[in-house]
Length: 295
Image (cartoon, rainbow, N blue to C red; front, side, top):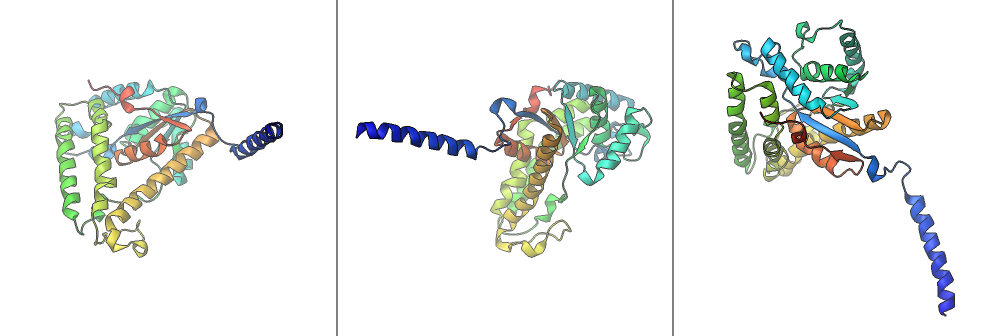
């Protein structure tokens, strides 16, 4: 009996080995070939500008010098691909503008919309690195956090919103008065404490809100909203966009075979995307604190 089991066991192990081998995806990545991704949170710089206060203008000589210092910190990551919060449908337009910029035929500081973080951060960094393209990875679905406005426990969401504003407002006000540099402001907006508080507000607290409605919004199909789960429905709207951005990033990486990806994007998305990429074995999330130092 023992002599019979040995060859049978050997055959079974051989069969299992073949089966396991056949189930291995052709696109599976060995652990040592992961892609490093650095997600840098940034406000929309144009929206920081207040005409009555020159200190809020990123085009001034002072703020330009400070932005250069911030770019120096980020560039230590040495990305081989830079991705930005712009829709893929705008790729050809961005390619054209970046080509002109590379040829010193475009000055963002004199063009409409030139205060954008795409032109003030991504363009100079990509040119300095010698990259031939900046990739658009945004997705439709952008909407205001204020569309969640009523329901049971809505006070929790409202209080969370007030608390979050109270947390970051003093720092922004210091920057507006000239007491903080661009690097200090942007570093603060990339701290784990800030990002986690914002993530909790948008992706956790709303789940406690039920039996309400969302404000009308062209980005939200009201026909699919179940009033009892209004808060969870709100979260799903936000998270759905992040999943599409994630898809745009990973498919772009597959096409380019880049190994060090820098993504410049709004802070609301960062902790969510870090969570998604943190469970993707093909990626390693690089903490922004590795490169951004408060000074």
